[in-house]
Length: 250
Image (cartoon, rainbow, N blue to C red; front, side, top):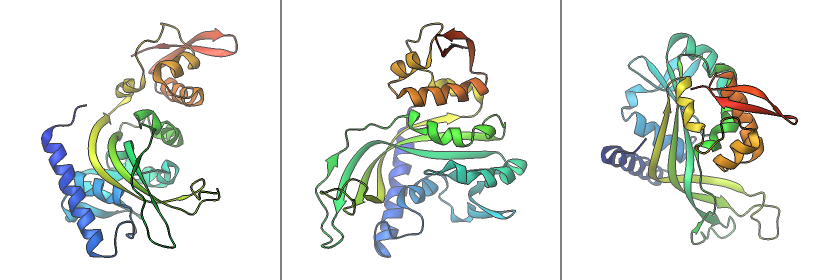
C-alpha cells in the first residue's frame, strides 16, 4: 500500500505534536507511553475524546465509530486478555509499528553526551511481525480482528549501560522517535495474509525455499507457514525428506 501525501503530512503533524509535548514536560522518553506509541495514537486519532476509552475492565487506546484501535509496539501476548473482551463487542485493529530505516544514537548516562547518529544496517520488513503474530495465532481467524503493519523510519536512542567493553551489547533502549511514515499493510481478513507470500516460489515448496525467497531465517519461515496453514492460505502437499511441502491456496 502506497502512502499518500496527506497521510505523510498528518504523520509529521502527529510527530511534531507529541515531541513538542514531551519537550515541554520533561524531555523525550520520559512519558509513561513511549514516543512511537504516542505518535501513532495521535496519527490514527487526533481527538483526545476518542482516546483511552474504558471498555469493560480494560482501556482501549482508541474507540471511534464502533471500532477499537490498539497500538502495540511489542508483546502481543499481553493483548490476549484484552482481545478476549474487546472482540466480543467491537471490531479491533491492532496497529504494529516496524522500524524500516533506523538511525542509532548512544547516550552516556554519566555525562549526558549523545553520540552522532549511525545508520543501522538492518532494514525492517513486515516479516518482523511474525513472532508477534504467533503469540495471538488463536485469534487471527476471528472476523472482528484486523491488523495494520506500519513501516516507519525512526531515530533510536540507547543507553551505554551494556555488559560489553564498549557498553553496547546488552544495552537498554531509551526511546525511538519516528521520523517518516514509509508504508502501511492492512490485513482485514485471511486473504490479506497473501502479502507475506514472496514471489518466485516453486509450486511445491519447503520452508527453506520460502525463507530464501522472502530473505528471512528458516525459523521465521516455519512459524509463518504454520500461521498461513492455520488460516487456509497454504496447504501441505507432502514431504520432502523430513520437511513439509506447501502450496498456495489463495
